[in-house]
Image 1: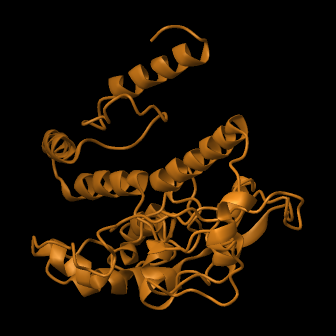
Image 2: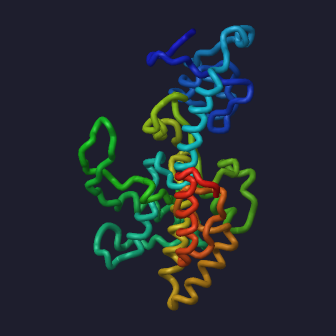
Image 3: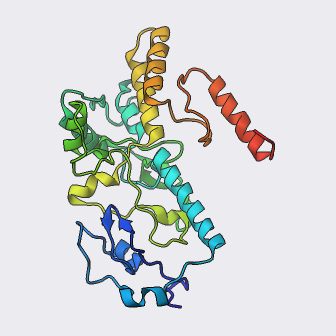
Length: 302
């Protein structure tokens, strides 16, 4: 069996594999694809090793089903977490960046950046994000990496407590179409407007290797390095409506209406068989979710 430098079998593309939306020829070593990604459909790199079609059935096989299930489960876990909070898209701004920019009384960082959403000027939403990027204060934070376990000075990055929210995640052409109520089907992002996840170079790799390298998404693909996570979007909506309202009753009414139209707000435990809460002021929703999680952890029937 041909193995990589870590002693694990290489992963190769099957006849339907796609990398970032681009079809990859059957038998191609996926590790090579991650190292030298395609820039357009049909862009087959000379650096890619491959198993010839005539030899594909003889020299490839599926790994043990139980082992495969473990890899798939881990990958789904990482995909879900990145969708909810964008933790692996470290170039992305966070919802905290926007909230602080709209909180001049906090007295630091980006007092002159008006980080509201601009319906009538789509380009300004990207300009705001660029200004927030340049104004982002460096904080002392524990990045919890094995190579540097102590606290370091580093910019704010998305996490489960500070989810990603960055308007640059939506290409300007798509943002203009959305605000006009037009279809984005033919836009350059292929309809994937808020979120992208490239996966790990190595199927067996640690979760730390899920971080997206900068050299994959650049140029007209740079927007994919940013994210509007489901938690970040929920927090931005809640904060925006709460800040803009005058009376608590009206704020609650507006939040509930938006929650009903959008399907709810993503916060609380990771329990997907339950509808998202529609009223963020109603803590009963959160208590019910916590109780279901606790019953599940205890092995009781739901």
